[in-house]
Length: 607
Image (cartoon, rainbow, N blue to C red; front, side, top):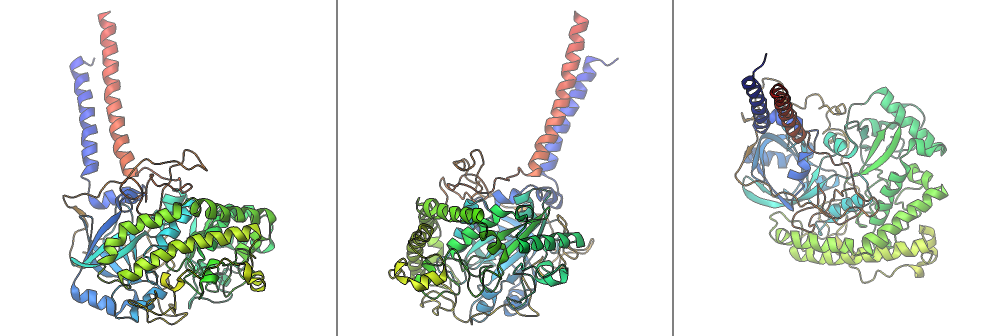
């Protein structure tokens, strides 16, 4: 028979175990902690939950120079990275990009865009659960904010988009410049956006930025998967024959126009194109290039996800302010046609879907712009980044060019909204042919200094009129250069698993002999703002947010607190936090139950 003393000893031991479990979770090895964090999204708060992140890249100066000299090879080099005081040893960095890479390579500049991987040489290492960071250099964008604003519009419409914020970058402690920090669209993004049972992800891209019949236009070309090489060769995760069959089957039904709802996420695709058409984003599927998008497939249904928006707001393939302001909403193509753009064409052929597409365009023009939200955000972001732009060590533009670009960007979005509403109401032709026939109906854009906003092939550079020099029209990553699909040109990963060769082989030391553990300085990252209004379209959903400079001090990026409606509601508590709290709660509950049982028995005996 168990005595009261023994009951208290057991209860005390259980409570002690609960405390030890919590302490163990807090002090576990970084590699194990990273693997647990991976499924939770701790990085959303730590990386994208504050206004401007500090990133220092430490590496051998000679290796840095070699990497810059051979940037077109896009090969990873070992480095240490410190983010807001937390150091990650033996990470890896490489230049990235297509147009931006070739453009910078032709200039006397080191301001490439970069990818930084935590787990290239250290198995299991991550940036609070995110294995890869993207640093974009604002190439051809003197406003420094076109990409961030574009992703926020996607978020406003509920389209899964990468998280972003700004980063002040230093190299070996020396100022390097203001960059846009983005979440890579890979496993962690997929889990955050779609949950643990996410589907397949592709980044269609053909060599040379085109390629009829390679599949990146999503035109159905028969049942042979080899006809869609631009899709399947750029899979982010490893694919099976069955995965490819589902995509081809969906394209076949898209081609026939039959049972579209079963094979296309119609509403998501309509929202995606409404955003891109409003933004006049032509470095995309809407042009002959047919790239800079992700194709997501789950349970046989296709949807499209956004990527690469530094040339949005009319900065690509358009040369006049009027063309950019009045870009037609009902045949929104540049260098291509409706027939070569079936995933939009087939939907707009259905009257119900066309009306829904028009409704989203109206919502953007009347609410997102007309309600003052977009211009307010431009002003907030400008106040946030202006001091950093003014001291940007590798800036491609002067501060005066930046200021002029922002002023004209605010004017542009107002004129664009006016034109879109006119096209919807019928007072302005909504097709290219109609606008050519009646140019007098177009919105007057003569007050807009369009070239000052930046773009391709507009001359200038620092002291010019908004476009970096050194790039010929159409320059792309050609044969033999790395494409941006998959994981850095290596074999794609299985869903939720790293690709072969990603992690350092067991027992092999990192290249510089560093340790994988993350070391934290005294100063921790500023916690994100919280609270904020829920979506008026879906009450109760916390908006995730995707633009810097939110109210309340700190970014709404990565958590609630932004003021825009809509957005991604699939926030998950970090798995690590749940394990810590859950494990401790279970042991504590067990201890309390033992005590309660003992007290009842003792009271029964006394009675």
